[in-house]
Amino acid sequence: MIQMHFTKKFLQMIPVAIMLGALIGALLYATVGTSAKDAEGCEGLSDYRIAMLKAGHEYVDTLTEDGIPPSRDVLTYSSDDWNDLADDVVTMQIALKAIPAPEWVKEWH
Image 1 (cartoon, rainbow, N blue to C red):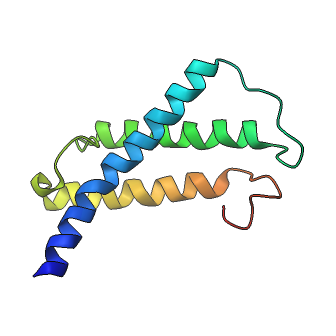
Image 2 (image 1 turned 180 degrees about the horizontal axis):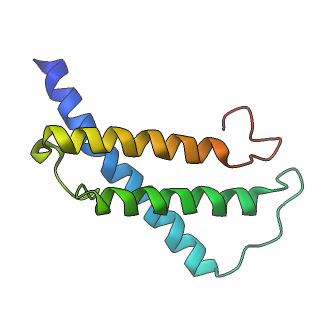
């Protein structure tokens, strides 16, 4: 019973965490306006960050278009909504894997 409760709470937080990450990144980027030159050893960070944020924005847009915006309570999802979410997550993973990672990031990208 405790594990089931934990699982439900965890599932509820996934879309919110993704949305918050995308929004915080967008706000930071908007605040800075332009990217600073990458520090030594961090070459390619600016382009990588922009590409990752773009993928995150596209993921949130897709969720919203599918009627399952990150702000929606997952306990209200229908079977079709869960199928849409699964498809959207796979699409997001494919998009993330397609982003060229700088050499120093490849290990955890």
